[in-house]
Image (tube, rainbow, N blue to C red; front, side):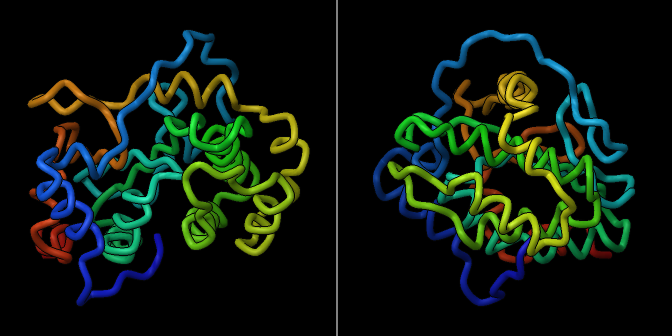
Length: 229
C-alpha cells in the first residue's frame, strides 16, 4: 500500500467529519447499493487470490487483517494514505497476512462506465498475471483516484497504471472485464457492521472480526502498535 504520512491522520479526519455530521462513521463509508444476483463466474487463476472470498493476500503472518475497498471511494483512499505503509510493512515482514478485497459498490457514481467494477476487475487481472505488481497497482490506482460522479478512469488509463506498476499484458482481461461476475459476487460478501447492519467501504476485519473504523482512526500507528511487536 502507499506511503503514509505519520503526522496527518487523513482517515481520522473523515471519521471526525462524519461525527460532526451526526451520522458518525456511516458518513465516512459508502453504503452499498443493491446489486443483482449473478453467478460468481470463473475466479482468477492466481495463488494469491482466494476463489471463495475474493481476498488477494500479501504476507503470511498468523494474524489476518482484511480490508474491503472500492477504488472510487474517497474514504478508502484516506485509509490507504494513513495506514497503507504500515500494513504493507507488516505483511512484508510476515507479521500479518494482509487480505485486500477489491469490490464495487460505487458504479452508480461513474456515469454509467462501471469504474468500480472495471478497476476491481483490473486488480484481479494483475494478480493473475503479475503477482509482484499487485500492490504497486493498488498504490497507483489510489494515487490517480478519480472524483465521484465522474466517468472514472478509462481502460487505457488503468492499463497505463498497471504497466507502470510492472504488470504484464492484461489488455484483453481488462477490455472484456473478465472477472465482472466474480467482482459482483465478492461484493455481496462485504461484511456488515454488527452494530448497525449497514455495509460500506472501507471495511476492516481482524482475524475475522469486524473492527469499527473509529477504533482504528484513533491512531495513525494502530496496526503497528497492535502487530508490530
